[in-house]
Image 1 (cartoon, one colour):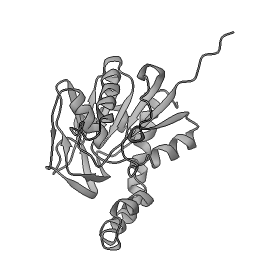
Image 2 (tube, rainbow, N blue to C red):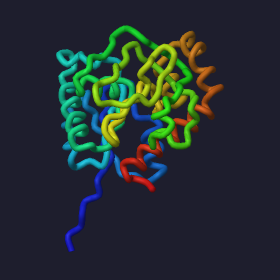
Image 3 (cartoon, rainbow, N blue to C red):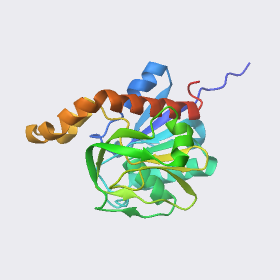
Length: 232
């Protein structure tokens, strides 16, 4: 009998300072096979047809910085393949912006920026969407962006915030982009803010909201794993 290879979830990392954090913690906890590809280090792109799902992480670069970071073109190519085949996809922050660009909609640069713990509201479609099953219609997120994606044609708006109207979108049945960071942990927050003065501003609010934030972040990640049929 020929054995069928188990498909993995593939994570694409664009920036070594924006690691997968909680994503990998939850994948390991759930026993889900995954592969981390460091696109910034020149590791080869995956064939989306061989992946159970794809997650594209954030990064400090802009979604249109292809000339400075040529691997962004390759990531957009992977995203387009996910869209064509409706491969379960989750783009986080820059990953959501790259989804917007891959779908032909420009990213708004230097506007709608948010940093730190921010409240996000689900739209009626978001309340009904399987990605947000079990998450309150008003929930806390962690944000760290200066740019933001617009709503591409054919996409559904799932979540918004007062400063950033597009917080979560869906294309087709299983291709998602979110502007917020469900992967962030206290260690990542500490790393991002660097010096003591900035951490004194951003870390205490994160720690105060950590239990609520982690609850919704874990639920969202588990929901995505279920959408990809990696857990049941």
